[in-house]
Image 1: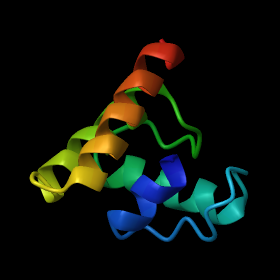
Image 2 (image 1 turned 90 degrees about the vertical axis):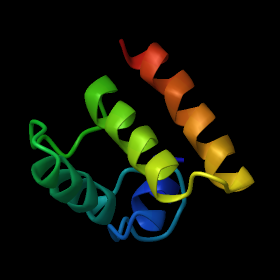
Image 3 (image 1 turned 180 degrees about the vertical axis):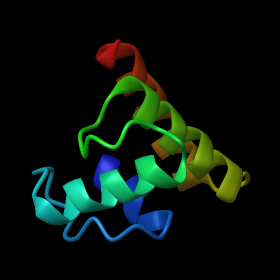
Image 4 (image 1 turned 45 degrees about the vertical axis):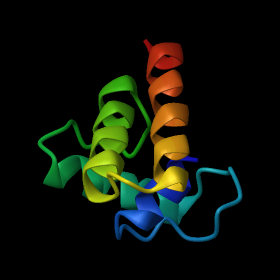
Amino acid sequence: MVQVALNVLGYDAGKVDGAPGGSTKTALTNFQGLNSLTQSGEIDSQTCLNLALKVREKYPNDANATTLYEYLMKLVVQLK
């Protein structure tokens, strides 16, 4: 779902396959850099929270985006 969030926000995470490959790491690093986060290329609670908030901000009335937001928020809790 992190790959989906990155892709819908315009960061090219590549094919959505659940495997954090090179494209996903690059997309994460770019997202982190543009959002004043530590550029690790890894998913952490702060990055996940920011992804969730950006998805909700970009698509406030979209049911699929709401589902994605809710999933990401659950992941935030798991990553803490």
